Length: 135
Image (tube, rainbow, N blue to C red):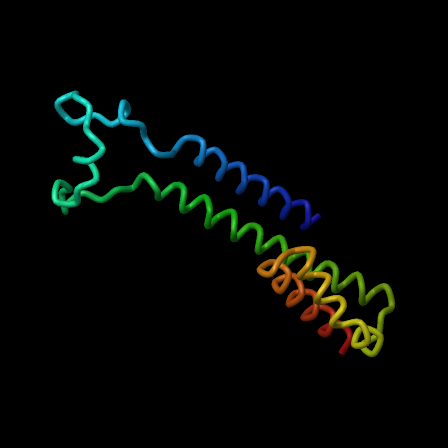
């Protein structure tokens, strides 16, 4: 049941990120207008001397929050998947000595399947759960 919740969290995070990406993006010259209503040239808009120091741009904040949320949700899903897999391997009857024989193949497979970031997260949760139950 928890893995379904993790999948839902991932889907919601990725959907939110894609919606934010679709809504925000580089504005075209016709979309940028000065306060007088006329178009702003890209050269004038790019000069840092024209920018006011008392204003803060927040256009990228929702995008950053969505990306951070998606990364956290994906990490939590990999963690929960590792915990579930560790418990299932233990309850399937695999002993510590049997696991020690295939430990590095298991780690390499997890990193190859999940990537260099989520693979170690999965394996850390997997081994912590498995070793905790087996000892």
